[in-house]
Image (cartoon, rainbow, N blue to C red; front, side, top):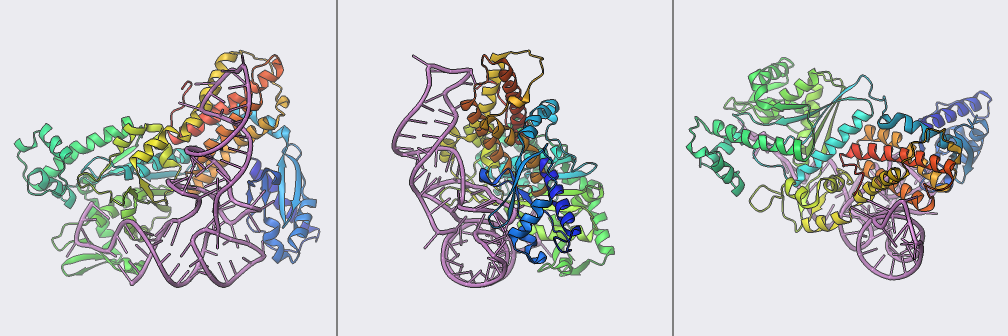
Length: 530
RNA sequence: GCGCCCGUAGCUCAAUGGACAGAGCAUUUGAUUGCGGAUCAAAAGGUUAGAGGUUCGACUCCUCUCGGGCGCACCA
């Protein structure tokens, strides 16, 4: 990538300057290269001169000039380099380099942007993990699409990714018992019209259950089956592993985890219950692992579950949770230390989705909008864009009327339209032209700008694989589509000039590839016609 | 009370400590007898909640205040 090469150039220039005593000796800090927003400042820019000015005991401008003079510019990549105002060094990519990239994209096709950052590394990413007590709601849409997109990006970055969904279905968990009480008419915690209908459909009243847990488990399985069907067929999200809480019990993994903690003297008894010493790791208080009744808490079950993941030697374990689980983050981070996990445990919290008018998104009747309802209303592609364009930290206020109104003007169509338009031109051109394309003909400002956007794709993958800020993807897709539409407006693809036509056909073909790769990351469909 | 998150254009949201805080929608205006107008070009819209501090440089980091959300179970 051009960016890496520029970083190398800068580093060498500083070292050279130090050898020639033009700069004094000091350790070179990390060299940051970014894309300036304003095009007059070049395609890449670095602030390194300003960062080292103080250590070098020179003014930022002087340092920038010294570095610039030492730069051994590779004319294959760079056109010119400039020093400007406070001390930035700005790099302009050469036309030649840009033109060459079109060919490379065409050669790589779907593989374009495939990186090797994660080579030989495994990542486990767990998301959604909705309870088998009801359908997925609009709040869970965030984790669903974010997780799916992030998993796609990590795979594109070269990691081996395992997508996992955890189902809290243990018969002795309180939520399953509570669900069972609803079935048996002893409680109403989960009662609503849909559930009543479901119970009627499956004739649960005629069945005899030994316990609340049995009843809840039975209904839970029915609900879970529906949820899984919805996720796989409607959301089009594919999980590699559907982990079951009940399996942790079957294989006595809770006991094993418990004993491991006990062995390290991290457990003690108080008021009849067994407590975990999270305070030893800086927590405000300790937490109960086993109740006075002897039954394990969710914490112990989650520890057993995470131990299982840690044991599988993932270099990263990513959990995507709702905001209501934020209090659980510190505990699990402490647990990772207790269990001696050497990889990264990254826990990402999705902020809440609130309903317009300040209503809380609760499962109580009338206050829940299911994810399915939203998708039926606006469509999958719009829904995905709608969620993905926002940072996880944003607290969304949801209004179905507004979502619907915005959906008609959603930028996702703008992106898809670019792809459809290219497809249309390619159909019309139908040039089975095998002659050598002269990429040097791609010289128009709009053409070069479009190529500039195309080659940014790899950097987008790399950055996002590192910082998980997936909103970068839809933003990039929109910018890319914009660059194409501008090009289309300014440059006629099919014309009497055969040479130019084939060069431009190559360019839009490359654009089509990158658009498709980008939409694929987001799980948005790639239409040839609209 | 304590912990985590948030406050940016009329609305919905962006912005690895960088240059003039950007998009989409809404508003106003202009463009093609068109390889798809679901497009392109432009205008207008901001004291980044407020006050200090750190820095060559702060929407971003630190402190305080105000406002909002979510947690703080022997629920999950």
